[in-house]
Length: 155
Length: 92
Image 1 (cartoon, each protein chain N blue to C red):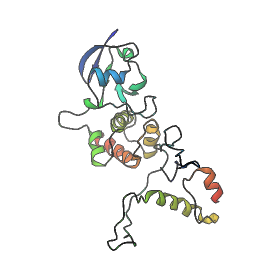
Image 2 (cartoon, chains in turn red, green):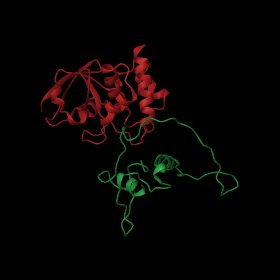
Image 3 (cartoon, chains in turn red, orange):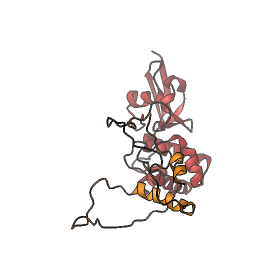
Image 4 (cartoon, helix red, strand yellow):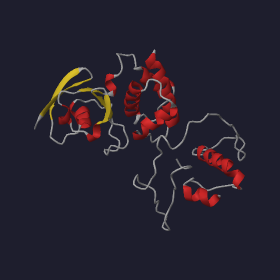
């Protein structure tokens, strides 16, 4: 089995993986970072979104071995100790989650949006998140959360 | 959402035809626009307490009423759910 080394949430990690091992399974099963979820396994629902070298990707359709040397951030890597990332806090404050299954992906995707667009409009948020599905259909508050999170990330 | 996307239908044997994600329409973030929230509190008229049972979800009715209201200049006074294009066209 090939080995793969990368930086995950600031820590150097490595592991033996099968060629077919997906990045999400490397994160969840090898590293025990189960905050990244597998919803659909077919790159539709976005629950598996993580950042690779600063850009959001769906980790359920990426092979772990593709990311040798990459810098990966998962939902676990956002908070600073007990202090939540502003986007996480905005979801909390605005009731941007119900069951919470889609939330890690929503938050990771939203942060990438705000990196590209510091003050996104509601339409731009909805357009960006077309690849993230919330089965509770809590989109209304998710959009509100991201507006608030974007404002908090500025300050 | 029941009001917009998902038609709950059964065959003649009572088998649910929209029970899996293959034939079940999931709402996406652009299915609805943003809206203002409000509460309209109304007691149930059918018991002394005015209480309602579980599962009396009002949101699909509200959404359908909004659509009917928007179509009222065209003479629409009621419509079946979900508001897929064929049903809306028939109502008009």
